[in-house]
Image (cartoon, rainbow, N blue to C red; front, side):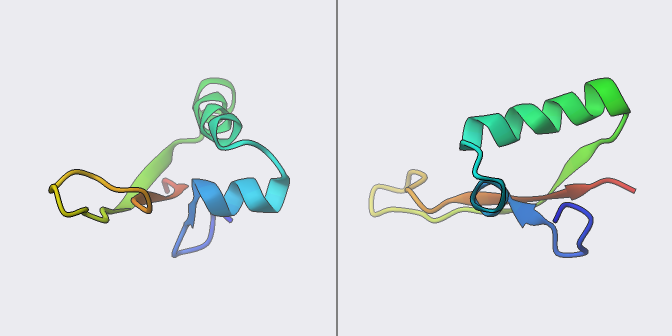
Length: 66
């Protein structure tokens, strides 16, 4: 999923693997540390609530850096 041109979100990866979201983020850190593979932020989608603070529904798209 991270190799797709459009990347993937933490939620998408968690649903596909059955992992918790914090486990997916830890996996990203482990990729860089153990395998030398960098996961980059492709896009940050910020859903803004009425009080101008990040609301639930905000997410980041990740993919493997080339």
